Length: 488
Ligand code: FHN
Image (cartoon, rainbow, N blue to C red; front, top):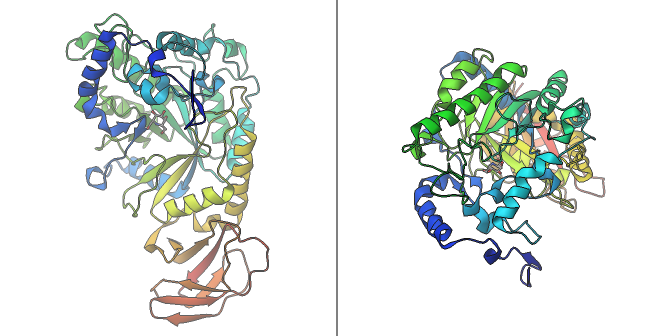
């Protein structure tokens, strides 16, 4: 390993990824072949534009969509055999993505040796501390309203008792298969539903373990990129085998795991445009016979099966007038990282407010530990978020956007005829004004502070209202304050 002074860490030496001349040639070919995959850059999806959005016509889906837009805050969880190593989920398996995805591999290994080590992680995954009820209690206390859980990531490891693959948590070669909670999805989904929390199943359309997607028996040999090892046009029967496998797994999750409020499909490069058509609409309509109105987020694809768009690790600059949800990590990675650093409750609430005033949801992601516990730093943040939301959640949940959305540092939402003006403080040392300028131009006859207290005096001025809040008496600035504007 060469010491890389600039990054003060050890860089995975590219030359250690033993690429043969053919594989280097392949890499070039693949680059051309996957040019169409520009919807995913270094493993991060971009998101569909408002123009490509298609409002669902099924009344049950529209109703569920309004439910979704009311929830505002979800708990995304990336959990799988990869959590044992504390490395990036799946991506380091793709040779064509090695340049950016293998820096987390900090031990001497070749690409081929690493891929075998990774795929063998199922043989040691044994999260005996997993307690789904405890996770659901924490999610509830955090103010999150639904779960978005990785049932299967790109690596193909299934966190439910699927009939269609032996690469699963309940297989005999996985030590956890004897545990009471072995069918992780079944127990986790039930624990969340019992607390009136929604359940949305993350599912990777790509599966890098199943031989109908990745196999060494094609020209490319063992060198793999995110797409199939073969051209589906040249091997249509093989592709059909993969389509059946995938549709069967989606049906399993949709028909055998209780109420599922949505399915969230990752791996946007698996799409008709890339010649990788799994005919998702076909199977979603079959699932909806069991799950009336179930939402479908076929990321980056647009059209009738992308019922909401999914910015990742970012927040749109402007409000979006279509359903959307930003998925953002609480730590530095979607999957568990040893000694990770986590955002503070203040950072996440400010993020949530910025998203909600623009009409979106936040799916905050936590990567559970390989032993089945949630990282303490993440739990502390989640519980801190819940404390603020216990007081101010009325201005968040069930609201919709309200012009001017966000102006002069004040965010606006509205619900049941009340306008909420949300003032947030990015740091605890920020000055807390005794008079607050609220740039809202609608008619207002009464202003109160949501955390309690009598009506506040205010002056109507050009373009808004100056509210006499009084001197802030605490040492630290609050995370945020909410003023209720009423026109009685
Ligand atoms: O490739 C995945 C990535 O590993 C992670 O699961 C994120 C989370 O939204 N989705 C894809 C990248 O956009």
